Structures are given as structure tokens and as C-alpha cells.
Image (cartoon, rainbow, N blue to C red; front, side, top):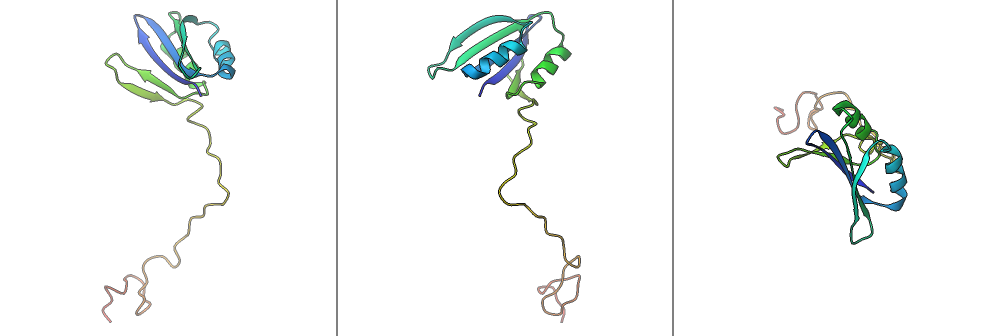
Length: 128
């Protein structure tokens, strides 16, 4: 799965995709039609690196584009810190397991003592 990162440098926005597989490449190019391809390359495992840049968009358009991507994204700041961006990849509903999880409700509400059976305390603090 492709992993994206985005940053702003010299009044332009840059988006980089790492570990791009061939089936994801066409989706990325369709999504970023209006962007300039600044660079590309390959990793040793055969996955591709794609870099796009654009000077025409404002921040709101870039963030809305990034949030609509089905890949995990991070935003890189000038001082080297990275921050995760919530995208469609992060918002997917987790699949249900084979069994249903149930929350057990309290029976009778509160503590009951195993010695005397009264509510409000337990057997360790029982006075009888």
C-alpha cells in the first residue's frame, strides 16, 4: 500500500508517495491530474516513489484532496516533525469479528456482600 507525505516549501505544495504498487499508480495519476510530476524513482523491492508539486492551490484544496485519498498520510513541517492526517484510510470501519462482543450490565447495581447478601459493601468490609 502506498504511503503519502505532504509539505509546503517555497510557496508550493509537495506530495510524495512511497511504496506505490502498479495497481495504485493509475489512481494517483487520475487524482493528481492538475499537479506537476516533479520526480519518480524505484525502491529495491520494485515499488515506486512519486513526487508531485503545485503552486496554484491553496491550503484548503490541498487538505481536501489529501483527506480524500485512501492511503495513510503525514504532514511534514519545516523543523522535521511529522503529523498524521486523517484520511479515508484511517476512517474505515473496522470489520466485525466472528463473535459478537457483549457488554455485561450490572445486576442489582452496586456491591453485594457474599457473607450477608446486603448491598453497599463486600465480604472483606462486612461487619457481621
